[in-house]
Length: 340
View 1: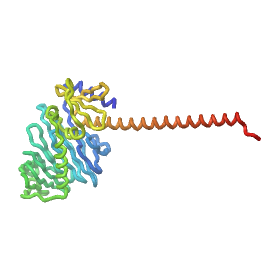
View 2: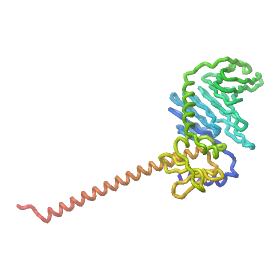
View 3: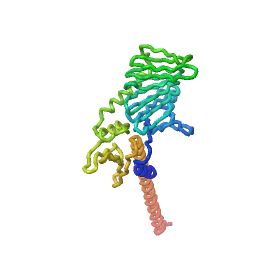
């Protein structure tokens, strides 16, 4: 924990000089979900709110489900037996955010926002999908070629030209589905309907869960979210905000000793309730969530340790009392021998 806090101070001190680093947030998971790393080391079991850096690959098992959230609220959801790679997470000199993902296999839902600051490209077997307007898309790559079905909005689907075949660009609108041609990459077919899939209801349920969480929305995020806007729904739903004169907005988690402080000039700090506040201007909200959960674990672990120590002291005290009673009884027996 001390190492994490030390890192936080270092990042805060270098905030003006350090290059922008990005990470997506694993905002939901269920069942068997693993994360493979950029260095090709063995995959680790995924954890909720886990940061996902550029190069990470998320894979769901037979019962696995996962949701990846980005800074502007865009999300990508994986159904069982699916895999998604985060190929590019970058910020250009003009502070535009570029995200490129690769659907390796499976059934994926993407809800992507279109703006002049955030740019998304999803590669599904060579079909490059990007939002023209805010869009909800289902991508089926159980077997190539991919089928791209648009529920809302509009996306552009592009297949790059190769020496062997021409490419194409096609806008696909709500209610349409596009499927590439496996034998000719320059050809595709568009149907004027979206066939239902059993996982469509699951995606709608996740949307409803997000809408329910939005009911707890506060106005604090409007002042401080900036380009790291994810995670605010968790803060609003799992704690409360209050204003401290001269300090700014304070967030108090439920059942935790952490206090997260959003002070003047958009400074983010963590206060431990003992006069110690840590500057976190350079850290995104997902890391604040991770730090808070670590602290909650430490508090719980400390409570268990204190309970064990109390139990140990009680046990020693009982043994001491019993020993004293036995000693007294022995002395009494020696001073009053039995009559023959």
